[in-house]
Amino acid sequence: MYRASYQKGFLTILYSVGSSPLDKWSTYTKNGYIKRIYDEDIKSLVLEIMGSNVSTTFIHCPSDCKAELGIKLPFLVLLIKNMHKYFCFEVKIQDDQRFMRRFRVSNFQSKTSVKPFCTAMPMGMSPGWNQIQFNLADFTRRAYGSNYLETVSLQVHANVRIRRVYFTDKLYTEAELPNDYKLLGKPKDLKKEKQFKAPPTARPPSPLNTGRVESKTKIEEAAVPQETETEMDMGAPEVKIATAPDVSETEAAPVVSEEPPAQTEPTEDAYYY
Image (cartoon, rainbow, N blue to C red; front, top):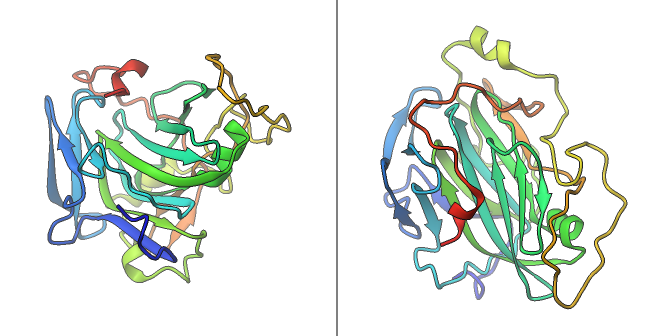
C-alpha cells in the first residue's frame, strides 16, 4: 500500500478531522458502534469505537485484509482517549527473518508473554487523552532477536476515542511536532485528573517480568520458531497524557478498575480472523 511511497517524517493513516477518516480502513461491529463525535476536552471531532466485547468491534488497516501497509517507519504513535473500559490494539509486522509477528497491547492483560508469532503485553493509561508511542524496531529486536522491516497491518479495538494514528521515522519533541499532531485540550475537571496522575518518567509494564530493567537475554534465532510461551523484560509503549497547553510525560497508570458490567472479557483466541 505504502511500500512504493517515499517515507520520511510523519505518515498518517487515520485523522479524525479529515473528510473521510476511515477511507483506508475496514470496520467490524457487533454489539457496538463506530462513529465520529465531538470531544469536549480537545474541542475537536474524534472517532469513537465502543462495544460490549473488544474482539468483535474494531477497525482494520488496510481496508483489504489481504493487502499490506508496507510502512517502514519504526515508530507508531496513537493519540487516544482513555474510556475506562477494556481496550486493545494490535500491530502486525514483518522482520528480516521473513516472519509475520503480532504485538498486542491491552489494558486488561495482567502479564506479558512472548510466543513465536505473537507478543501480548499490558498497558496502563492516564485519565483523559494519551499519546502512545510504540517503538516497533526495539520491540522486534528484544522479543525475537530480529530486525524490523515493515508494518503489515494495524487493528484498533473498542473501547476508545481516536484523534490521530501515524508513523514517524523518529520520536519528535513537543516543539518539533506540528500543531495538528499535538493534544492541546484541557480536561474538564483538573482536580479529578490530578487524583489519578502518577509520578513522571515511567513506562508501562513489558515482556518478561513486567519490570523496567532491560533483559540481557537475547532470544536465539532459529529457522523455525518453537511453539513455546515465554515472558520477557522489554520496554513498553510510552504513554503521555494531554494537559493544557502541552502534553507532559507521565507514568502509565494501573489498569482502571471501572469495568462496565455489560463488557465481556476477551480471550486470546478471539483476535485471530
